[in-house]
Image (cartoon, rainbow, N blue to C red; front, side):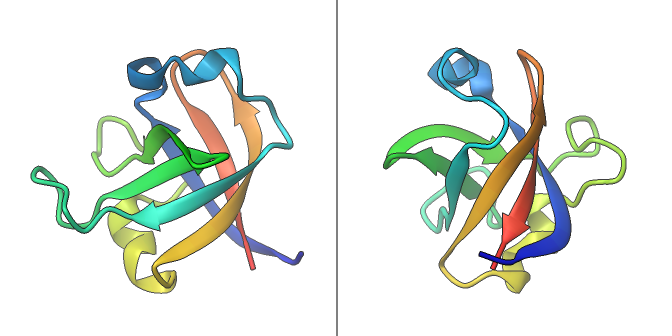
Length: 98
């Protein structure tokens, strides 16, 4: 698997208790959430088909040096893979893979 030089912030970990079962190096699936009522560019993050967060899309939640969901939305098909590179209890940074 080839890694792209695109990094994203994944937020809402606490909504799904995700920090307890995710770790750096894990492979996650990104999927466009076309039915999201709050964000037309929402990208949900899945681990083993379980929802574990969203790609951050707010100036308040996107970490400096990473791309927002809006910047990535048109660069992926309906879904893509990413690898967790760094994390804390609230956010994680992942790298999009080919």
